Every structure is written in structure tokens, then in C-alpha cells.
Image 1 (tube, rainbow, N blue to C red):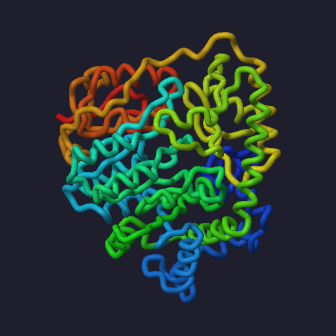
Image 2: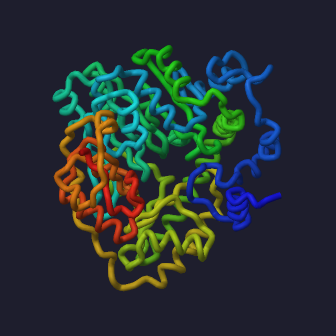
Image 3: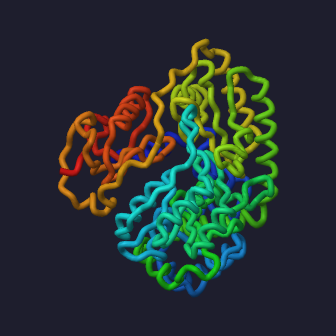
Length: 480
């Protein structure tokens, strides 16, 4: 048989026995090995099927899929729960387009996932943006002010809905309960991208889930923080503000007509693990994290972001299962730290920027994972330098002037110019530093000199910038 390069690489990674502090939440399948539910891993090939007698139909569930979704509904305390096999992106598209009509306005947190911005193109919507508070020194998005939400609603009384991210990638939560009260007092609908919060109801030591805060519809990436397979997510709805028939149609529109039964089975199994072992495993996880942080607090030059930011910058709470680790104070960048953890210690974190790395934990992580991470960090810290990481130019993250909606911009004629030549013109592309993942400019917005200076400085430091066709970040498309 000829070599299969992609499969070969995945199997090669398996042989490296990497310790996972990244998504998906099952951590390389280790949770299935320890819990042995119906020999799930050994039966994957056998359950890859389609709509035949006894397997039901995702788009018109009447039997086992309906039963599984109803069980999930009870677990996550919703009015209706829908399985998603095209990722949370399909859920985001569907819930936004279920509550809007073409031409409508929608308020969007500027730190939302790119699927939210793409939904404004698909739905022909006019976005109105809310900026989160920023930690410029660490390059992190923080909280969103409830007062700013109310102010924006008063300035734009014709919006149909508000969509926010809760929690953020790094675990920060805004006062969503207060925001929900404000949104509903104006007669609007609150949608929440809770991609990183499917686990939040497993402990009172975690932030409140979005549904408990009053959100009308919530999308969760079950695969990120619970033991489901990548691309398997859920959409939860409560109350009577959303037309469920329209939502079901949108889900059919945005999801495959050949849904993966393996992904749906993994969602069903994730619910079982959540119900039977979730709280116990989360208690162990939080204890391991507390011990890990306490150990690291004795190490010089290592910063782990903790609850000291709660109550500031509109942060209501913080998810302790997200570990932002920095050695910037001793001259070790996040990029260098991520690379050394992987190459020298076989530990993979989720992401990094100039200032630190993000380790995402889940109920599948064990005590030995944290011991291994602690030993690695201690070893690297001993080689720290005296100088600090050079700071990037300051950037205000203000919302640029919107000349065209993203959909209008999509269909305009464009031409490619250098970044410097783009200053003053209208962007035809996304320009998103990652992390924090907040767009500097979106299609239809005007490019400023400050943006270009900041992007060029970030690229020189090794930070990833997404959205441009030019992967070298030297040119940008502008509307002609």
C-alpha cells in the first residue's frame, strides 16, 4: 500500500505519547481507556453508519437520536437541545439566522469567533460591535461592560439580537446575568457562544453556565472541554423567544445531510460521562489545579494568571481550568515556551503569544499530567534570562469606521496592495491577530496606520495573523 502521509503523521504523533493540555477534552482518548464505556474506542469502525433501520435521522429525529438529545436536554437544563456535527460554527450560523432576517442589525462582541462575523455575510446582517476590555500587556481580551451593552441598545433600538462570547478563550466571564436582564428589558434576544464552557455546570467553583444566566440560545463545543470528538457540539435553547421551527430549518441548511454517527455517539457518551462521573472528575481536576498553582507560586519567574483580575475590567468570574502561563518576566516568550514544552518534554499546550501560553485542562487530565508540566516549567525557568520580553506597540482595539457591511464588501471588486499602501483604504479582508483573535479590521472597514504598524510589529515577533490571503502578511486586499 502506498504511504498515506496524513494518517502516517497522526499515527506518528500517537507514538510520541504527548501529554495534552489542548483540545479536544478527551485528551487523546485517555478518558475512554480509564472508563471503558462499551469499549467505545474499539468499536469506532463498526458504528460508522448512516440512516438505516434503527439509527434514526438527525434532521427528523424520532427514535434513538431524539432520545439522546432529550437526555442531553435534561443534563444541560434546556428547553431543547440539538446535536451538531458540523462544529459549533453550524450552531452559530443557525441560531443567528433563526432570530434575524436579511437587513437586520445585530450587536456582536468584537472578541467573538470568526463564525459570528461570517454569519453576518450569510444572513446579510449589519453588525454593531461591542469592544471588550483589553489586557494589552498580555494580549488578552477581558470582560464586556453591561453599561456598554445598554448604551449600545439605546443607540440602536432596531437591533434584533445580541451575541457574546462566554467564557473567553482564556476563561474570563462578563456579568452575563446582568447583561441578559438588560437585553431582555429592551425586548431583544441574547445568544451566547459558550464554545469553551460546556463543563461549567459541573462545579459551583466554576462560573455560572450561560443558560443559568438567562441566555436564550447557547452553542457549546462539547469536544473542547468534555470528552466528545472534534467537531461535535450542541445547541441549547430555553424560553420562548426563538422560533424553533425556523431554527430547525437553519440547522438542516447549515449541517451535512450525511451526519457522522461516530460524532453523535461521542456526544451521547459525553453526556453519560458527564452524568455518571462528571462532578467527581471535576472535583479531582480542580484539586489538581489548586495544588499545581500552589507549587508554581514558589517558583520565581513563572506567572499563572489567577483570580486577581476578577472584579476588574468587567470580569465577573474566571474559569480555573484554563491556565495562562507566562515566563515573560525572565525573558522567555510564549512561543519559545510552547516549543520547548513540546520538543523537550512532550507536552502540548493549546496556543501561545509573545507573552505566554494557554494550557486547557479537562476532566480527562490526571495528577501525573500536572506533575509533568510542573517539572518541565521548573526546568525551563532555571534557564531564564535577566531581560524582559520587549513590549509590542500599544494598540487601542477601537472599532474602525464601517463603510460597507461584511456582505457588501464580499461582492465588491478588490485589488491587492502592500500593507502600507492599504492605509486609508477600505479592507476587503479580515486582519485578525491570533491570539487574542479580536479582528483589527474586517471587510468593509477602513484601514488605519496604527493597525498596520501594530500588525507588522506582531509579525516580526512571530505572532500569527489570520484572515489575509497573503500568508506572509505583506499584502492586503482593498476594495477598489
